[in-house]
Amino acid sequence: MPTKHLIAITVIYLILCVFYLFWMTWHTYPGFPLDDSWIHQVFARNIAGGHGFSFNPGVPIAGATAPLWTLLLVPMWLLFGPITGGVALGMITQWLAILAVYKLTERLTEDKSLSFLASILSALCWPVIWGALSGMEIGLYSAVSLWGLYFYFKSNSPDDRYSYLSYLLFTLAFLARPECGIFIVAAIIRDALIAIRSRDKRILPWIVKISILLVLTVPYFIFNNKTAGGLFPRTYLVKVRGKDLISSLLGGDFKTAFKASTIYPLLNVQEFFINIAKINPLILIAVFTGMFKIINSSFTDRSKNIMLIALCILYIPLIGVFSPKYMPTFQNYRYVTHLILLMSMLGTLGFFWHSNQDFERYKRYKKPFFILGAVITLGGFFLGLAFSLFGGDIAPLLLRYPAGFTPDDLSVLKSNVWNICGGISITGLLVLLGSILICGKVSRILLSVKGILIMASILAGALISVYKADLYANNVRNINESDVEPGVYLRTIQKPGDIVAVNDIGAIGYFSNMEVLDLKGLTEPEITIEMLENDSLLFEYMKSEKQVDYLAIAPGWYNYILKRTDVFKKIKVFSSDNCTEVVGDTTLVFEAIWPDSAGGR
Image 1 (cartoon, rainbow, N blue to C red):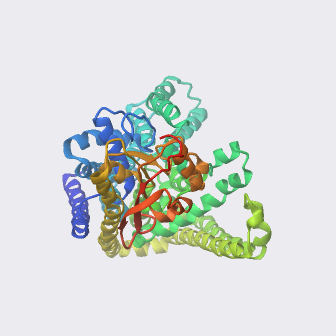
Image 2: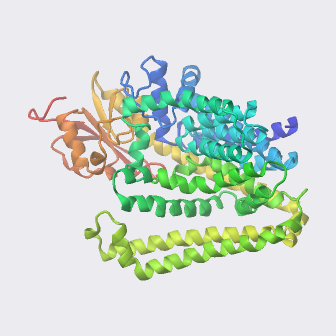
């Protein structure tokens, strides 16, 4: 990478980061835009203090979905404190992810100017900046997964150092974000197919790669099983709640399994492809064109090109299959920011990769590509029409408890289905647009106005990113007012040994310095799914098993507990307006006064 490119990318990235931080401090005091960021900081503080991987000191628990990030935060916490350390680490790792876009683009196209443009436009995607400053693992999993892809493409044989390095990075990506396990699965499948086709009988490369995978992940799985009762952390188990394909099949819930294999993936796809166009519409509408050009590229191994595009297409629906509770746009794309970077790269290639491309060879692919887009577009429309006509017969078959299904429920469901199908049709239109953009005549027109398009794309990304700084500032303010301030308040009134029950455990756990009962079950194996779905059971658990001294909750999450005014006496109210990152606008703090007849503590 030329030094001038590195400097320019870094300067643009830092300007945006500094602007976001400045705008945040203009609206509130320094903090994080998610309460989950403070959860990581509690774990980091306890590890640094010699209390092990625990939320409540000395009680080991697999309560962090991104353990690699938590461990990296420990030295940052010791050196710089929670906020500066978390933001600095996020900025560094996200910067590395943007540089990975440059290197991967260069590997795919052998064009440094195009690589420079792709990395600039990637840095101008606002979720990338938001993620860098979030205090979360977003930059880490983006960096290790994208550098893993780069070294995978750089590898020329299954036993060279780049191949081993790519497996190492893919495994680290899994430890930084479990969904990134899809990367290493894709690499294993592709390598296995190549080995079978080439009749490569060498076993040593496979032994080394599987050893890398096992050495890094077996301790993770053992710790999860010992402390959380499963292969994955409590955070995953609680958030999925048996709605994924595997859990529903094992539990014999075939209706949920059907939804996990069809409806949830469709929801994810339409949600993702509609909304990425809002990040930089002039670039991301050409995503499918970029995919097509990479598949037909002769610069790199075609099977690797196909693997990359398969990853980009299947990653989102597979999340719907295995982790369906949260959409890909949830909390400003915090689970899929590495895909935003890849999509920005693909859109850049779709619009601007013209050199060394033979326009004529696309002609035979134009028709099937166009037909595919038309089928998706019309399919979404007719699927919505079919449900409008026959939804009353279909809907009860998909419900676990069809007896309570009312005509009003059906009306709402039909409206939601139309929204989903509309999203599918829009995705199909993007495919159709991709087929148009690869036409020789259209490509030549784009080439003739390339400079104008480049400036317009940069301007669009910059303007949208600057505009979204207000979202970041508001997110931080919400967390400060709804979570940090209740934690600070509780610290002023708590006595040694006091326990607080909380639904947002991060900031309150960090600042209150109290033992926390996690009402969402992220760090409490004793909290069952049934309790999460029925808060009267949570109350009975507190009454008989763990009597708390204080309660700090968002009232919209609980019904029964709020009715128990005989036990919980309201002592403080914290409010935050224009809430974009917390449920509701209020956190209520109660003092618990248990009757003498209640069970033990």
